[in-house]
Amino acid sequence: MIETIIGFFLFSSMMILYLPAFHNELKRMDDVSQISQTWRLFSELVDVSLDEEMNEKAKQAVNEQLILTWEEFNDEVVTNFECDLSYCYISLEGGSELYVEIHEITF
Image (cartoon, rainbow, N blue to C red; front, side, top):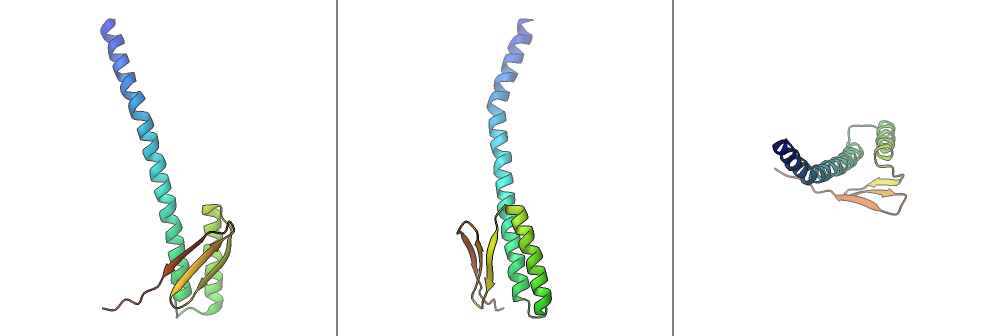
């Protein structure tokens, strides 16, 4: 009986140390996944905006859908999205802004 109690105590002690670390790791993985999804959506917006083969009406429709997906996923309202030859910006309602610098890649 004493051996069972000691075994239970040791197992409980190990779980007390393990579970918080496991929970923190799950939270970190969720955060990284959300950041990755955010930048993937931004990348898709940039790709569509810079696609020279799409007509403007199709670009606008795809951009609107991607922005709605962004707002749904991030709980942030997009106030502006613009691309020019060197930068693409996305402005959010809270005042924050994300941008990427566009470089020409030559092989």
